[in-house]
Amino acid sequence: MSKNILILPGDGIGPEIVHEAVKVLVCLRDDFGLDIEMDEALVGGAAYDAAGHPLPQATLKLAHEADAVLLGAVGGPKWEPLDISVRPEKGLLGLRSELKLFANLRPAILYPQLAEASSLKAEVVSGLDIMIVRELTGGIYFGQPRGVRRLENGEREGFNTLVYRESEVERIVRVAMDIAMKRNRRVCSVDKANVLECTELWREVATRTGADYPEVELSHMYVDNAAMQLVRAPKQFDVMVTTNMFGDILSDCAAMLTGSIGMLPSASLDAAGKGMYEPIHGSAPDIAGKGVANPLATILSVAMLLRYSLDEPAMADRVERAVDNVLDSGIRTADIYSTGMEQVGTEMMGDAIVAALRKA
Ligand code: NAD
Image (cartoon, rainbow, N blue to C red; front, side, top):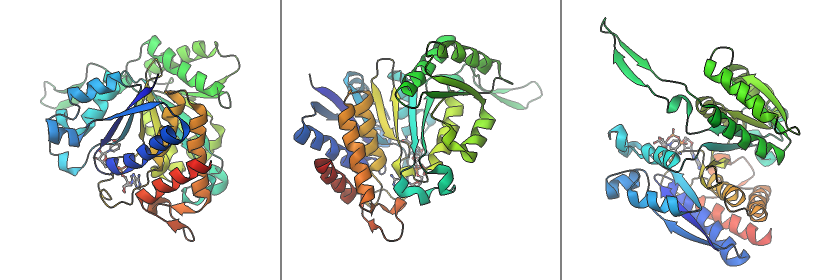
C-alpha cells in the first residue's frame, strides 16, 4: 500500500529547499518505484497569514493521517511581533507534541569533502559520525509548574520544573540502544546526576534499560564534561542519549563541529516509527528568496524519512550516495563553497542530486 508523506514547506527558505527535496522524492517514485503519495499544507508564519494560526486544524489532521512529515523551516522577522501563542515556532512545537514525537535524532556527520569547513582541526573531526538522541517531549521544557511569580518583597522569580518519569527515560534509552545496534554499539548517556535528582534517576533507569542490550557498551557522562569532550575528542562518541534541554544544547554544538549548518538533517519519531523530518537549520530570512540556500540538509532528511518511517534503507542509501557523489564532483552551494569548487544555487544543487540519483 502506498505511503503518504505530508510536505510542509513553511517559511523563509523553507519552500525553496523543500522544492528540491520533493524533486528527489518524485525521482524515487517515478524512476525507482517508491510507492508514495504526497500532500502539501501550511505551517508556521505562512499558515498564520492564511488561516490565523501557525498550526491550522487542516494541517494537523493531514499530519495525523500521514506516514511521515517533511518540513522545511518556520519563522522570520515578519512574525516576531505576534503574541507568543501564535508565533510560527508554536506550529512546530504543536506538531511535535500532538504527534507525540518523543525521540529526536540528530546525526552529526562530517563529510570528508567538507573537512576544512569545521572550526576544529581536520584530524580531530575527520570521519566524525555521531548520532545524538534527544528526548523531545518531556523534561524542563514541558515540566509543570512553570512561570514567573512575584514574591512578598515585590521581586519577581522565574521557575521551571525538570521532571522525567521512569517510562519516559526507558523509551528514549531504548531508541538509542536500537540505533546503536545498527552502528558501532556504543551509547553514552548524558546527565547531571551529581547535582540533579531527576537525572540521578535518569542514570539509574538508563543503566537498568541498558542491561537488556548486552552487546551495547553503555557509558555515562556529566553534561559539562560531555560538552568539553565534544570539542576535545568528538570521535570517541557513537550514540549519545540525553534529556530535552541537554540534547538541545549538545546537538547544536555537535552540528557546528561539522561546520555546515546547511548539511544536517534530523528526525523526530513517535513510538511507532512515524516521524517528522527537517533540516536542523531555521528559515534563514537573510537569504530567503535569493535561490542560494543549501537544500542538502532537507534532501538528507528525506534519506532519514526513507530509513526510519518508510523502511526503505536501500532508497535511503541511494540518496546519501547521490549527495556524496555530488560533493565529490566539486559542486557546492555558497555556504559550503571553497576555492576551486563549482558554486551553484539551490535549484542547480537539487538538479545535480537528481542526476546523481539516476546514476547511483
Ligand atoms: P537560521 O538557521 O535560519 O540561520 C542561521 C544562519 O545560517 C544564517 O546566516 C542563514 O543564512 C544560514 N543558513 C541556515 N540554513 C541555511 C541553508 N540551508 N543554506 C545556507 N545557509 C543557511 O537561524 P536564525 O537566523 O537564528 O533563525 C531564523 C529564523 O528561523 C527565526 O525566525 C528562528 O526562530 C527560525 N528557526 C526555525 C527553526 C525550525 O523551523 N526548525 C530552527 C531554528 C530557527
